[in-house]
Length: 376
Image (tube, rainbow, N blue to C red; front, top):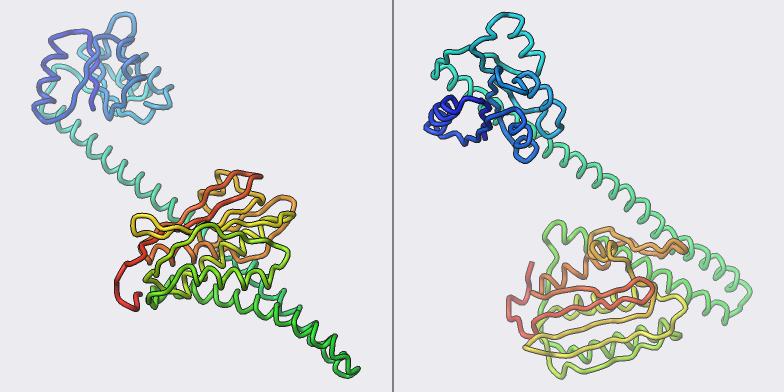
């Protein structure tokens, strides 16, 4: 928009008509004070400013405008009928003007100048947008690089821990075998097996991430009982975590058409997270029901819970919820993988949580989404 500032009404009207006829949006002010008020409220690409005005001349108006952060980049063209000497023209430029035109006006020349300023403005605006986009992309590369480095560091640590443990148990096994201590051999084998399962789980998650990124995560769908699946999962979880009581509430009483192994993976992830992030507690609630041809499964704990800013990112790749007083193991990809699995089943995944009051992770998905048996 263009602002014309002139204390002579006929000058305002005639110039406004010419500019509007050439498809420019125009605003007017009949004094310097009125112009300054409008500049504070509105954004202008160009200000056409008369020099000879009472109370506040054009030079003073321009100097005041240059002090406004909002308008300091606005182009100003001075118009003058009396002050045509070189010293006044120089003052116009020093006051912040980009051009100084003497009256009587040649409207064709003025229009050419206005169009030129508009073209420069558009080019500058586009260049600024490109710079902002480029800076945003650079920041996104930097953030991606930081996350990659952090993930490599975490992955190295998490993979090294079970490997080191297995190595230690193998050394202990060797000594126990030499001594013929069968009971100790069995104990060390069981502990080594647990560490190997952890290692296997970490590697499986890394492979799943790779499949998701390359679009090769396959779903082998078939009908199965969600209740039977849950009962099996709870039995396995109880064996590996005997101190935790997992209470099942509700029943689906139906078969669902989905990838049984992947749905089990999501439920196991919910349960292991509930146990991991609930130190000092001993009970977890799992709820299942069916409504409107959709199955609902939720796992609720009484653990540390999450802050609102953590809830926003909990399903992001590589995001890990950390408590200041303790460090939890994991790569920060389990919930991301779970969200991708549920999304590819046409479902919805979510979480309800309050800091210090525990969390409830859930998913909802169609029970009978008949698609291809194998889906990429």
